[in-house]
Image 1 (tube, one colour):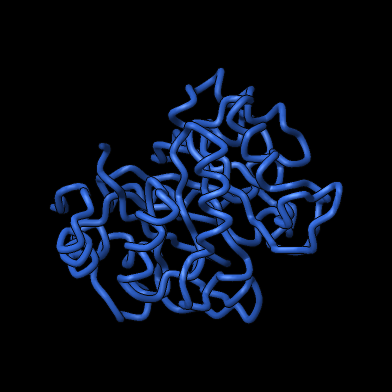
Image 2 (cartoon, rainbow, N blue to C red; image 1 turned 90 degrees about the horizontal axis):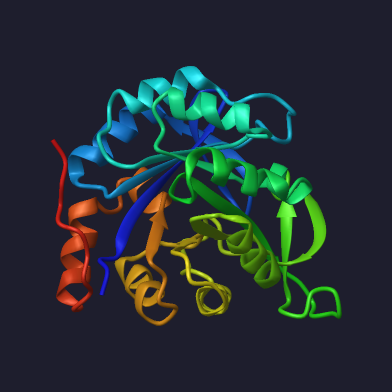
Length: 261
């Protein structure tokens, strides 16, 4: 069995670390470069950087912040937000990222996934999905709909079907972010995560809702996610990476050994 991963997300707005609850009431909470270094030294497995207003503001990602973070961490580092073309993604990789996260632009232009996969390899392409629970319908049979532009635009696209299509187009990994659970610290969206894990064969990262170490254990076992993404738990100093790993090991969950400098 492959080791499970602990990943932290740095949501960045105007160059500052930010955090929201259900994609609203976003507040600046610190320096993303300092936090990236801190979590790396604690033994984090991977880091995800999102420029959370690049798509909605229709601008390019802030490459200077990407470069600064890349200089501070020596673990897999993926970047998303405002990536609309293979050229955009190439700039991010050249700035120091190992992977690119495509989201809104990929929903509007699915061929972007395939083009990036061919250009850089599937292992470099992560499809991020922002998902909202809605009433089940013929168009959304799972009851989970894809929403883009930072949670602002409903797309009439079923999340499970989009996950499968993303895999077919060449994504090497999926980030499944529940808008309903985002920032609540009440636990991951287990049902959504499990449905997607069961529907695809590529790794699935659960995102949104992690508030206690027990939540991570649940999503990694019950939903069988390949990785759990945490933000608030670390950002507000409620827990350290080593605490999370010690607990998961105590629960018999195979995880990566603590790294760091």
